[in-house]
Length: 183
Length: 183
DNA sequence: GTGTGCATGTAAGGAGTTACATGATTGC
DNA sequence: GCAATCATGTAACTCCTTACATGCACAC
Image (cartoon, rainbow over all chains, first blue to last red; front, side, top):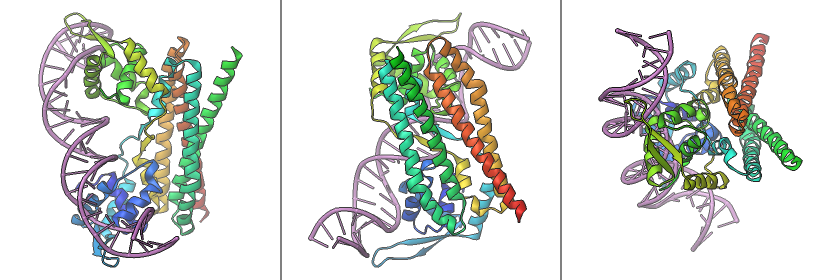
């Protein structure tokens, strides 16, 4: 079985304490969502493949009459995760943002529409930064108190970087508004 | 025809002076690559669809014996581009970065490997920032001298944001190194 | 009793990439 | 002469998302 980033996401989340496929998906929504989102339709088949490869082990763990599977990372799974974490080969980061694409072509708009576009982008960046600061970072810091540090580090890196971009766009907006009134 | 971001990418690049499918792809590699990459296998079918919808017009424009199509944005195409630039609806930004995913799970590694991982991430961010600063920004500034400002604005936003992330990771690396020697 | 959350999966479709296929032009 | 670049397209494949399908548990 060829392991890809979604495999390591599942492996890593199990290692951090998520037990079911559902829990893994929920955990990603509260943490890796901003740099590696996933869906249930990815998680369940991935778990099945990892079980077949004996990188995770499965146990029945029903809640009342409702069936549930409880997964754990095996020793081989841990080893595979560490090997990936150490490996140098890596696909380049992929960023796709329709908002920035709009900004790139903004010269086609009249000045007031350009400023509105910059304002919208700035507001969105502020929103994202705020969401990370208020929702993602505090959750990650609970793990940090338990000795698991890196989720909090990544959360702060994300929050700070988005905040930086938000400020940058704020300054641009102010500058454009000034130019506009100066005429 | 339903227009999606790649359609507007093609439309916008034609508007900025690219004439052929090949030229559009080359232009994206030198500008939008970091927030909206594309491939020739996307550009050519997109051009054909846009022509059918009469948002672009095509002319034969051979170079010697080699056939070439020269495209131009029609009035309807301009209008469609402006409508998109003004529209508020927008898919959320998508960022996928295997490097950051690794960092998120870095607690599974021994301290020295964690530092090496942070160092690699920092170096990569510095590389990207440098590439933007040295290759993308100067090219965009040529357009700026011709009155087309936003490609340069976006290039600077990207270069500055990556530089910020690179510095952030540099500080983290220094801090981790200090903790490690302190023990 | 009812809505929200927990829980597990499959099927179909969309978006984008890499590989394949071909050939002329230009600069060294 | 040869390599890099210009130029156009198609086919196959991968990855991922949305929609579909189902049903229990728990809190209000």
